[in-house]
Length: 234
Image 1: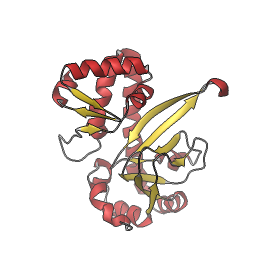
Image 2: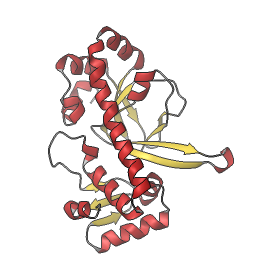
Image 3: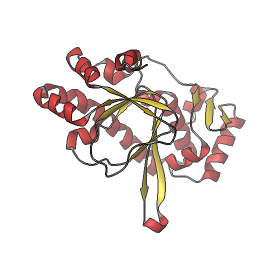
């Protein structure tokens, strides 16, 4: 599909876009361009200039960062974004450089709302900044929850909670109770995301498998009993 409007059903399955007023949703779609990324392809890197707002309509985008001295730098996978997630709004607000790296986790299709046209449109229609702010505050709430979990919860509970959040699309879907049975993430990616060792990640997943809550495949985690998995989070 080459027409951004063809992905409207995907966009409308997401809570944020579905609740936009038509006089904001329609111009967003009109400004959109399609971007196709191959697996591993860079979308942007930390320090890059703002390039717009994005929506994932097919595939998945990995958001990651690195820290430490150059000779001892460590990578951290912060999140994996799948349809119908929007991202990139921080640079829309502050007009500053990208804060993290974004790569295609698999073959992916994005809608890109270019930075300059979006800024010009919002300047002419400032009443719609509030709707964009809701996208930002939703991410901020999720970030605070992750920080709290890192400080307070043992690794097993954090991993279970992250699997539940990913299975439920981080609460972004409009359909109540919607969930994903198979999560496209490897043990290595999970360990990087949660800042725990690969060995610990493997042990936790084996325990969950033994309790018939998940089944681990190569590059995937299959959720067998979401309700029971959710119960282990508390």
